[in-house]
Length: 419
Image (cartoon, rainbow, N blue to C red; front, side, top):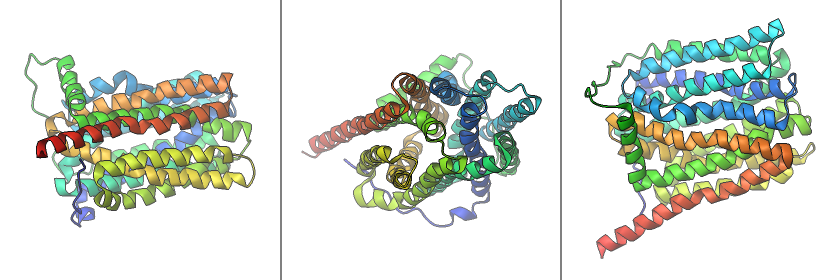
């Protein structure tokens, strides 16, 4: 069984509040992308982090989703979504501001990097849940796929291309100064979000007897009792788990073993940005042509094959260009799954449950990432950095299994009904 998409109506860019959300989120993500490169380079370079210590830093960058991901969704469903986003933008700016201050005072160390990375992950967990819950309030259902594609394309550009620009910035002004730029972007994002004119009402009060555990359970049950959501969530979880095993060691390989410059390290992410943009532009067309679920399954398989093919080419010579190109094409292939799964979840989830459902998905999907980073650090420390990269890329090929099982079960059920 497959589902198809109808073309979204034009005029999305004319919705003023959506533009403000779009620009504010893009500014915030651009700064985050600089930190993705800056924090590991500070750890690997001036602080001399080992592969295991670098893996711990990546683990801290995602640990918040594992520890507070589930209750965060229930809390967001009780609060004004836009206010949650603004407060967490300000918290992230403050956390990042402590790093250049410590560097200038000569007291910056790995424990502070770990603490800031963890704090950022907690704030990002709240921000992202609120952002995905706010979007359906700003655009109608017919424009939801287009809105997600627009947001995801710019998120991909900034998340992947930002480190490329960040590499040049770090080379020019050092990593601590680049982190100051990131802190400023969070302040800019908060100002833009504050200009959204659509009312941000407090959600209806829960019954006095409602307990946080019960509300979390509602989100869990909805995700895992809805076959499509269950399959998509498990596929994304396996992909993120295995992907982070390798991703946690990628900069250790590039900056540590191959001794590539920050600019060249950033080029890998720049290629991912270009590939992600192309993939986001093609997502709706691919989904309409092949069916939404079938397109998402093919997306996971093809991206895994391309990322696996890139690994032998990560060398400090002409082969590096081939690796960069394959890495970018992998992101082109992955976007139908990345965008389609979010849009599908938003369409089928009741608005009152959206925060908790988003939190459940983030808990499972992003909660796997600190575990993957820890595994990557251990493999990199004891078996070598390239062994971690091969392990992660090979495991990603298995990610499609839950989605394939779901599609097969839905097809059998549909055939049985028609018979």
